Length: 445
Image (cartoon, rainbow, N blue to C red; front, side):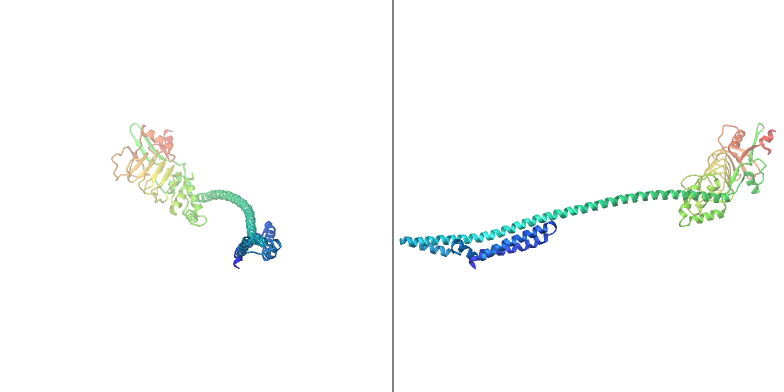
């Protein structure tokens, strides 16, 4: 077996190589490469099998080709020595026989060695060729799989693009729905504003100014409120009859609206509607909305609240110091808002607490003042006037009462009677009257 060591080493090496190659070949025999790989594998196995058969019958093959089956190094050396001995003995026939024998032995040894190498080399070459073919098949399979994956990824990308377009469409629809919902909310808020306004208007009392005063049982309505008289001139101001003033809505309506603001579904919208109603041109509606917001502790502090043509005869309590309230053409007797910023415009006010005033043509009745406001100011006789107090003292009529002193505290460049005429023109609650009590027109007649 030692003589065949190289053969068996090559045989087992080929077997070790061919097994994983065969397994790999079988694994890649899929798709279009399956038939080719299988055919190639069968051909290689056949060729290798023939080579192994050739090795098994190597003796017969070599004997037919060279006349000898196999040769060894010992045989070559023995034949060579025998030939040399015959030549030295000058035995020509023996030398020729030994030479012929040596040639056959060398040829057999050479052929035997080369046959082993050729068989092993051929088997290894076939195995390497099959391995290369298998690698090529695998490469093509990978390329095919990559192409399939690329097509799958393209399909997925197209699907994702379609999903993206669908999501964009949904987003656009959601935006449209949001806009539509916002519009509907605005419409609902507008409808709610109209409904709340109608409810307030239904409970607001609207009367002429003089009728309001008569309902309070006030005396001295036919007498001048304030008057001025000298030897050269005399004039007075009284109240008018015509202006229509609005009360606040009744407490039942305001309470019902306040309850609506606590409703989970409608509360926010009702609150928004009330804030819008604080800007209503009807002073009674604006005052009602302000009172409800004050009750639910959400006072309107986003801007001025303009109250036009209102009659504030019942107590109104406002607690926030940040209120900006403007009274225009109004009569105010029961406002309790200690720190509000109140602006009077051509109105009459019986002041309950300190306020800041501005404007022109007002009549203010106050217990005390820190500085003289514009217009006519009636101050309690017992109160101390500020050091910078300036103005012309007037005669106080019975409507204000004898416990007050009246002053014209307005900056003027005209005479007092001319100022009275200007105030009567711009303040719808006042009119010029004769000092004795009749109207100015009646006095002239």
